[in-house]
Length: 442
Image (cartoon, rainbow, N blue to C red; front, side):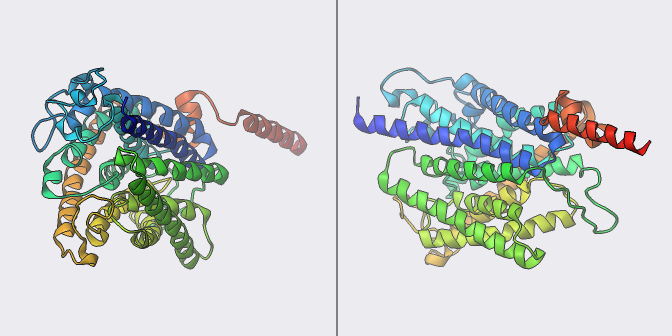
């Protein structure tokens, strides 16, 4: 067998496994930023959402995204990833059905699995934003629709040979396809769902609701950081040493810049170097560089990550002022920086820096044409994902309901939705302590 094919396939599958491992990172960050009484619920959602995404993408999503069709949607090979074969001749698996993915010289199922884990990531973003008050079944249903239809349609526009790809819109690893899609869907869910009980007071009063475990959130952030070294470099779909090395560096430098600027910004605005903001600053920098990781220089990636770190802190404050309750900061990380990172390609791109002919961005003598294309893409995706998600969330609300009752929300979704708790010995100890207190008072 051809050595290059073997190396390319090993690299793609290794990168895909790293992206899959990000599910653990999201589970840890989300549960750490939430209260202990909702831990089981969040962990369970992170398990189920990948299962739902896998099924929906296999059944229909892959074909809608990569199937040959029109500029808006795939029409061929839609059901059950049809059109694939088991021939060792890799090219045969793509002919006449999935033309937009024929450039990837790896076996069909390697490419499918790599794209599947990206689809699952988009759905996971929504989980944290609607945490601590959404019905379990309602979240599962929305996630299925997101991965079955919403995500694949946008993916077709950009990665499946659709109209945005034809326009000259560039999104290397998914600042828009993954992060903004998840962010717009989450924003719609937050609007329909409403804030958690007690989050906002009269006027502009914002009541902090601290998460129960910053250690869990910090571990999760490191897991996500590691996973991003598959997320971005893996999108080469080939074991290209120079390109992979470059993308690893742009990814990492954007992440570290995001940590530093978010920490400094929080310190200046809040009086303390807030760890939660530093964690989201890392993620913001990584999200921001995802669109252009292969298209920008390492120095440019530092600037992109640095701006992302500032944006995430300001965005958290902005969304709170608007009473859009986001327990984990998903809107600030994935939506705000997904949009910024996509536009940053139009500012910082350097033509063929890793071999891809993107043209130059505004800051490198290319004029405003690339930036305009990026802006059109951002608006097109927002114009589809947000209203469609809003409609789906609303239909769920008026049919099966979207929010748990107030009593269940106060007691915690772990008991109400799952009949279980994450830390049962804490509950036992607390009850024992209270019984002793009552006895002494008597």
